[in-house]
Length: 269
Image (spheres, helix red, strand yellow):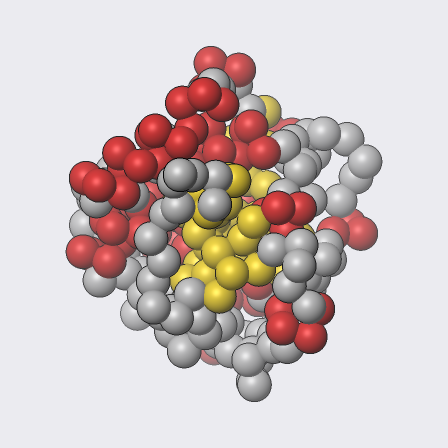
């Protein structure tokens, strides 16, 4: 019998058979904002801000299913660790900032996986400044480049969804720059081997999907009925799915843009 990963009670499975009416319905009051038409045509578009996927990180497909099973049995998946740490999903609310909520969330996951104290970060502290305080869409490289060059504020310094110039203070600019030592890896679009290889290493991946016009965070490798799948966490608050968790499978799990967080500096509280 094919191995099937356990599901959380209210997790939504989105696969090639899922009607569009199911996944195309937004949570009331929540935006999306992914604009992948801004992305170029090449396999790797992040330049100096994210290293191309290194071949030495590949994990052979024959190892995927047994590794997934072992991670689940030992409760060492990223979702297990973030649950133990009490890390909540993002809530982008009415902002069109999914493209920075997800990269910021995987930075928080990376803190958990590496055993650091968790610092909750503010997507709007980067998104608002990138977009000159407009509530408009974007894509992952904009977020990653900004984080590299300018850093990100905590939610105590800059509320998570505040598109508000009042928070653009010299103190906040200086504080954000203490949180910009981050290592990212870019994945080739729609490459399941690269994606599964990173998830099996507990490296979270921020993924943009044209079919959804949305960017979410993939954190766990899974198998459902003998086929690869991935657990994702959305940025539509804890009421979506099962505390923000859902599952993608088939072509729906293959991102059109993807960047992974490998390491973050030790953030100050």
